[in-house]
Image (cartoon, rainbow, N blue to C red; front, side, top):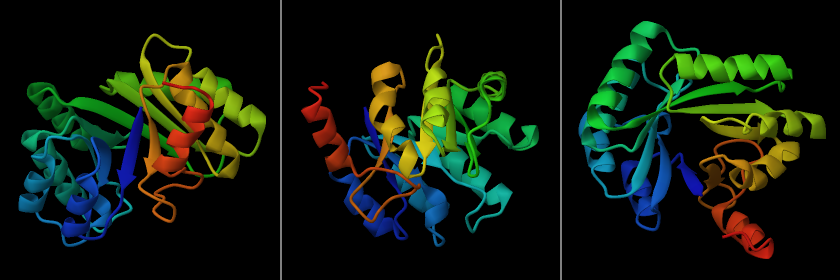
Length: 214
């Protein structure tokens, strides 16, 4: 399953993109002028949506939290919370998600490397201990072995999204759903990538068609 990651700078552009999508991640941190009313409007739409608001964006923690809570109340299917978040920030969001039937993604990112196997397994465990329904692990890969370690995380009874960032990680974006990942991320089109190595949705669909993936 493909989740299109949207990092549009304006509400109107994001709404336009959503017209053709049934599953998308909305990067709230990409929209500096976003209001809580805008969040309500976005997540009231019928599509399956992930609410993500990275700390690298323009909002203070209390603003990020308020936006994620608003997204949950408005109908977000998933909420993404960074693994390194403080419990005081994370736990209230998790509780609100549980109350509203919104699934929790606890996400870990390493933008420099792919940790060793035992470290990756510990990271996944810590994500579930923090309240995850889905653990997302995204790491920059430098070799085939890095990709293999990430894909090995999918040998689990729990739901794990494993992503290799960078050009060498592209294979993980294609194969992870075949090995148990509930979904993979793609860009809306070429030039709209939200992470290094991300493949646009049409190219990814074509690759799956060539491989006779349904």
